[in-house]
Length: 260
Image (cartoon, rainbow, N blue to C red; front, side, top):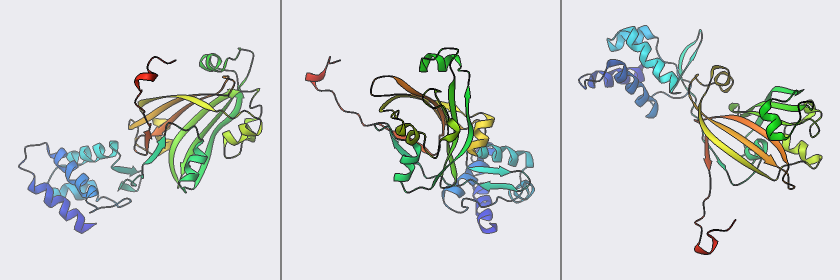
């Protein structure tokens, strides 16, 4: 990327009179080059020494700028290989008005879906699981944890809990939990979701292939049968750079105000 590198450093020298710290100027020059397509996803950056030499700045300054861009998800570092422009994510828009499985949702978009199992087993329930699922301390809970992957990109970590009476053999689940529940007449018909911002910890970030501390979405979902019984308690982490959740809102008319 020698031509692109020369343009990056030329821009840096042109802006050197702005008064901003040098590492911010370098960070902006590299980020602008990525946004303008001068360097694309997967392209390697020159080494810190080469950048420092070309830009006539210290390696400490280069390292600080690069680390900022890694934290921001613009660049990725691979141990022993170097620093690269991060893959460009196509954002997935998911409606909050429909209760669908990840498998069904991605299939409608024509995306190749697969899961990496993180856990499938029966356990003593936690206090939260006992409260939400209505379990006693003597009952067991089935936990199903998966890394959800679409078009070879990890998008979400889902950790679902159900009563063992509903899912006595979690290891027997195929590609879709909801498909398995439908076979026994236990597919949920409605759910309540709570969405909050979260900074990803080391283990979740590693699974999602993003820098630790990057912004993500924490989603807690409680799903119900038609009878009103809670059937599923799921806590998920979604990549913040990959998902947009969309809800349709309707204005309440005067005749509907006060209705239960």
